[in-house]
Amino acid sequence: MKIAVVQKSSYNLDYNKNIEIGINSVKEAKTLGADIVLFPECFITGYTLPITKEQAIADDSDYIKVFCNIAKKLNIGIVITAFTKGEEKAQNSAFLIDKTGNILMKYIKVHTCDFADEKCLESGKEFKVCEFDGVKIGIMICYDREYPESARMLMLKGAEIVLVPNNCQGMKPRLNVLQTRAYENMFGVVMANPPYENAGNSCAFSPIAWDEDGNCTNMEIFVADEFSEKIYIADYNIEELRTYRNSEMMGNTFRKVDAYDGLLSKEIKEPFIR
Picture 1: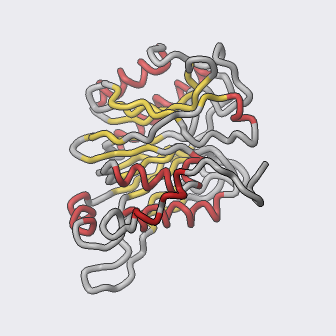
Picture 2 (picture 1 turned 90 degrees about the vertical axis):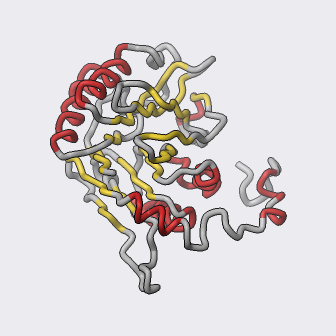
């Protein structure tokens, strides 16, 4: 499976310009042989905050439909992102569109950054996985990746590849986090981040940490620089990935879940009270 990772800028509330950049990126990805295209966080709307429900777009808006149409026309999958209208507030959303132009899944960011401007958003209530071209795909958005529970839930739901729309700075330690998520859950991880100072670094990691002889492998498929506006390709051998997942000891094989009761507690203690 070839995943095209779009490391390109979008512009705040300039929906038409962002659509143009997005469509041109999908066309370029098709020429590169991609099966699916991954965009950074809130690409259609731009990652502008605070945002109101009125400024956000509807799930059935023409802004989403144009990507459904180009997906069908070019026979390519797309993960497109935007602020969308929720029940009372805007949502931070990603849509997985299949090669026939149908929306397979809408994922709403669970871990909104409530310590900052994202407190104006509605949070999602669940992590989702769906099948795309015979491969089980999960999505988590930006701050979701900071919580191992996000990736764990996607692993428990069967994800083989996890796609991460992203828009933030300070990426160097977060690259380590993403590789760790791939390692501990035995799924591929692919992240798209826009280019600017201390940002960029779009990346892809394989879950395969050892070869058949037990020798350590290089899990990094690619890591982009900070500033390049371009498309990168992450190419996964799905059969090789599945063989590894069927034999190694991470994931859900030997977890001792009886010891995890505290993970469901809502109590917050010092030093984490804010």
